[in-house]
Image 1: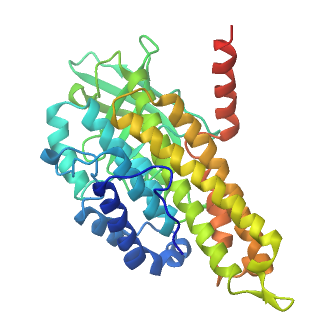
Image 2 (image 1 turned 120 degrees about the vertical axis):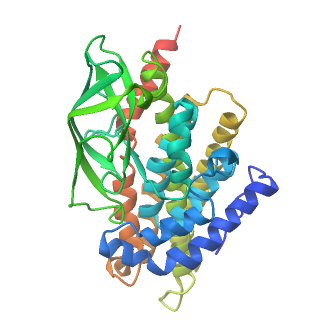
Length: 385
């Protein structure tokens, strides 16, 4: 089953082309192994390499670095289609890897751009960032940066937990506190150049195909060339990376929600109870309609926010709203789908139990909706006159 996705936002030919390409790839290469990904608890490297061969690891990056030079809506529709097949692949690729690639493109120097971006587009280097916190918000306080007496050298010390894609990544975008002025700095830490450690966090209820890690930094020396932006731009870089991560997460939530709706409608039209298929019952129809309304509102708003970004207009507040709404939307739709399946939702033959786990677990990535609502309310109250 396929819902019309351009009903409230008319996409261009190139955006439709990207969506269709990603959908075909996901159906052919990811859907057949989606249960294996959850069972084996590993990010399938073959899928990542195949995505790289199609250019899906560098959709918005300039062509001079191996990217496709497309707009952000194109990346969002690709992330949505990949998440529709497996959110365990979509979040590491787009929330982690692509978000870091965008930061290097926007803030890195020419040397680091040419060193890392082509390899990231090819999937030869995977990347993660240290924005996440175990309590569901963003801070840099766990890692300290000290400017060494040796010229152009920084030393990082500290531990960062719950880093998505941490063990699979050679490159880490690290946000740290400058102990000299309490400002924030953004570093590129390359595991082949500095001695940071990774330790996998093995127990996960959701997103089992992605890896979660603890990164440890002990006298991790980084040169000035690996600092993104200037030393007074760390907070600005952090805010921009956070907003981009929110958009990529929102796309993943929409993709998972679409998978839930697909499964719910398909089951409702096949399952019989009391002499007729359950899609004829009003209670089931209400669940389906509720899910459809929520996903269409989420999708159309997300595309509008990406359109703001593509036009170079401010989008941080809107990205926060999109992330907050879509993270709650996907949990509601997953619950609706579970209700449609009834007792069969508990069986491994059906994906809805995994959808429910993934929706609950993924919703707190990038910041808990509870914390984000507090931030939204605070801004509203401060602006009230």
